[in-house]
Image 1 (spheres, helix red, strand yellow):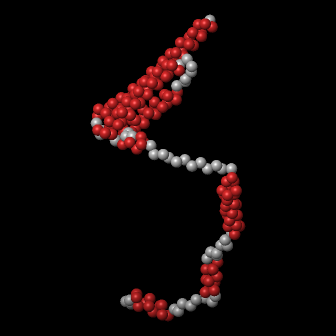
Image 2 (cartoon, rainbow, N blue to C red; image 1 turned 120 degrees about the vertical axis):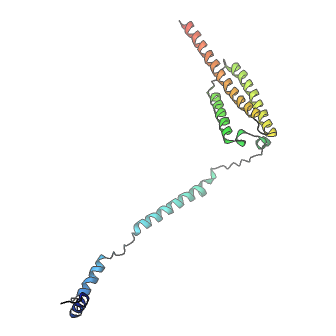
Image 3 (cartoon, rainbow, N blue to C red; image 1 turned 30 degrees about the vertical axis):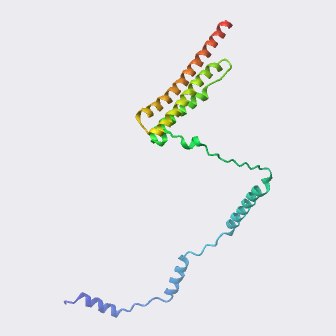
Length: 194
């Protein structure tokens, strides 16, 4: 009874002939065709809508640029090179950190200047402070020239920063004086009204 399993399977395979059922191939092809997606038809409505929008935009821009140009006046501004701009040397040329310091003080100085309220009563006081501020500004420009000619050194950089600090302190002092003057006038008005 010893039989080789391989031989036994081989014999069985030869004895049975496998035949496809009738119509099996046709059913398979029908099923396959039903499962394959069909080509989608392209919706021409959206294409025509997009084309009409492009045409309308083109006509609109054409009308703006070609029809309405009679009312527009063209002004040509020419920049005249200024020798001061080319020779000015700032902290930003040395280091970004020094540029930040300079920008900080200049911004605060400009803010304080913008906050000043000038009236006929305070005009003389403001003018005297502005004269001092102008002198500090001229000194700052001189220090910048020195920085450019001699190169960066600690003394010049420190003097420039102190100059910026002095200008800011001067404006803060002016603001305090104006507040004191305003309060003293309000105090006199209140005393006179009582």
